[in-house]
Length: 113
Length: 111
Image (cartoon, rainbow over all chains, first blue to last red; front, side, top):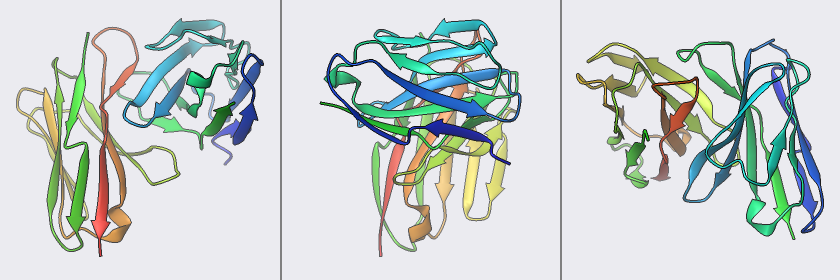
């Protein structure tokens, strides 16, 4: 039972580079989410998706792009990385409705130099 | 917009003691969920409360949903070192399908 996986787990990049963080889930969950976690800010929603080809902005979408061509994958791209995007990124998925549990991936630790 | 606040932000607890962390929403919630994140780990679902005044227990953890469905609490009895981590509450936004997370309570246990 692979569940929800993220890759890479750790990434170091430089300012201005494009970076893509991958998220894959094996449960056929409809909803997928990207959060960033910074000290003192808890979990902040970047983007989410209700189904394949349906995405919407969260609280902090600037500087990020997402796509969801397949139900199981939800990549997050930093088009031109900035130091302020150094963070821990968590992908999550949920079966459907608002009363369903969210399952989080193991996270990607990103350092932008 | 909807806000979910947690207090305290940090909790230092002597091993064996009890403590409570609180979650308050600016709006009425249809349900509230609690997650635990161990140091270096990812948030893991603990429990969901749906009914007004609901109380649920998981071993030494007691979760309560307020009568007005705007607040919740987590009480841990006889704290152990395994309780170390950050506890988040989360509630769904009134519109849409997003969860709003509180800032978390980071629990440190002194042996």
